[in-house]
Image 1 (cartoon, one colour):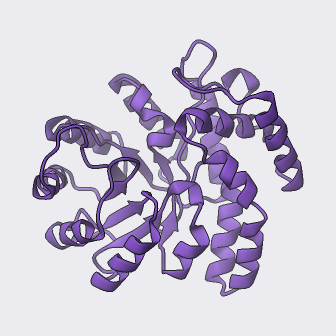
Image 2 (tube, helix red, strand yellow):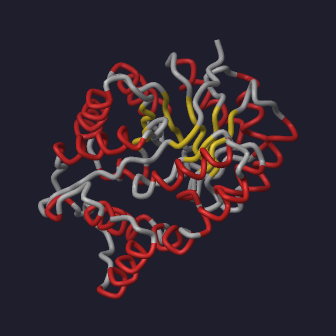
Length: 298
């Protein structure tokens, strides 16, 4: 049976590290508790969680910690995409076993192969699990609207796409025109940078970072309550902060964790990013502190 029920605000977890680069699992639990208290509709563990800097044991422990702490209250989506089909299948099956309710997988990029081969990769992974998969359109690995529609037609586990490669809006339009919501569910990414435009096109949800989920939740509720002008106005008050938060992963990881520290979710000792990364300057922190005050985030 095709899964179509995921919708709403699914923040991507920020992974807290200490100065030694070790995951601070107590702070992971604090973050999950905070997100649950705010009322998020799901949690993702993905690229912005720095999963590409984790070994397999760390990935599995992080996922299990989040699954256990959330106690089945909301679905947890795990990024399991890798460059080989076999490795992706291994991580996908293990994630399902540990309690993930969905997966997020981007296309392989290192080997230059025809689109048909990439689509076979997704089909083979989808055949290996019983949970839905978000096609992740991310960075240097875009998924065309045509490919997303074909894949959703071919396999019921491929019913979601997180649109993240800019420009996203033309692919929203293409998918809307060439598929239906009983086959392909559209989510936005890019840190929520185009949330209003996506909502206008019937987006079923967004996957921003976990830094200002309360703002995204309020906009989501206002929009679905048909208070669209109010939703737009509220969102517009945060656009400067969203811009700063989305400056690229090497810097964004530090900035996002700094905001979570200022909001009382992380301790200062657990607000590090794993190396390599680009630390924010004093000017960056001044700009962020100013926006935190303007937006009443503490």
